Image (cartoon, rainbow, N blue to C red; front, side):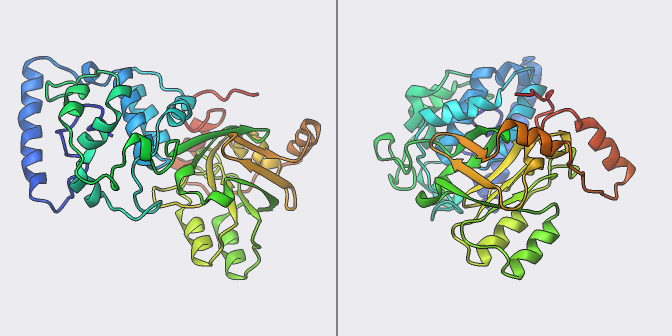
Length: 347
């Protein structure tokens, strides 16, 4: 991401940590920082809105982690740039998925580097890129023009993409103003799914149910109260998703207001906003409710009408947590805000 934003040396993003080239890149970074300071070039001069749009486009082409939907807006905010969550979906619809990287596919980052790295991906996308600058003094389009791809399966062409759309989809519905899924890691027969909810308020209870084989194929596991205010802290749901996968489930979806890691696969929907602790409808879901997931149509709904949801929300009992003063402060910070630190918009 920083390479596409123009804030790190070319090829730095995909160079492995154990590669001797990393030491050279670190040295060149230090030299360039001194030059930029002398020339009074500031990070905000490079990290423009065009640069962030380029970063999102490359991430969609690579099929990157859902965490980028948190990271990019946060970095952009520090740079004084407004990035709306729905920009990810707009760009994803326009950008084919050109790389199939673990866990969504067979290739590793070392393969991406060998095949051409970020410059190679930029070359594939060059006609769609904004001509933003970089710390090298070259524009992203200039870097893209010189990029080369040496393996057309690791970094595919636009007309032979792994998927017609990019890595991330933003879903909406009566339980979510927005929710995030890594659609390129979802099997085709689960792109549209409906099933009964199984609701758990802690990871431990969910893991116990998985161990007891109390989850059935077709279920939609719901894990509310895991957002920034609810958890608090929006923890990573890697353990539950790995446990479901390890137990052999292939048709179980997971919906949460928590987040996932880049290693998550399958129909795992996170970042549900408004989160349950702040009064979001995900907190009103009960065991047996039917949830409908339609990724191509970007829909996420529970089969309840608005009055039923409102009535349920009046009865919600928030789970008690033993919180340290720091976590209490964190919860207070995000009460009334979404996971991007913005005021919740009640739909």
